[in-house]
Image (tube, rainbow, N blue to C red; front, side):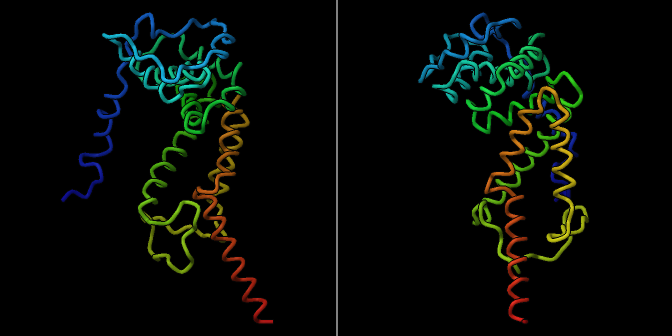
Length: 253
């Protein structure tokens, strides 16, 4: 039995990743609008519910657009344009004006999109700045939030098999006292600075990002308000510890 999670090394994942980065072939019906397109009529037009399937034979871009339209049905067509740009950003090659069109979309219509889109699409949007951002701060916060939210998705999915709701912290006294993976020492629940060391720089990076910043700050605020995150559960565990300590002090008086 191999002692590797991914036999052959992490580099074996590259071919799997590259297979998903084949360029989206498109026709006139599924092509992106020009860079100077007027967003106003797109913004006021709603995606049909249900959307019209693409005519056959269809291109990869047309099929992807239909798939996205099904998810965004009833919303502004501007959300579908954003989704199309996100899809192009995940590929090795894309229309030359796609990055600039994405940046212009968020510069001019960011507040509207933040109200119109759910968190799933907002996360995909901020991650897109890692590839399409014009400045280093934009690309950095996009990549950093990609790592944060991707790991959160994996960890929170695996936790669902524990049988404990994401809003419920694990009860005290149940911890197995052993080193963490790769020999890392355990987190100091009451005195540890890991949360601050992790999240505070993200907030500062978001404040410094001219394009992605408003969206990144919005998502970090959403994270702070979410009752089912690891960070909220750690807070609840600390609160419980503090309550136990206070109760012991009262009983000893």
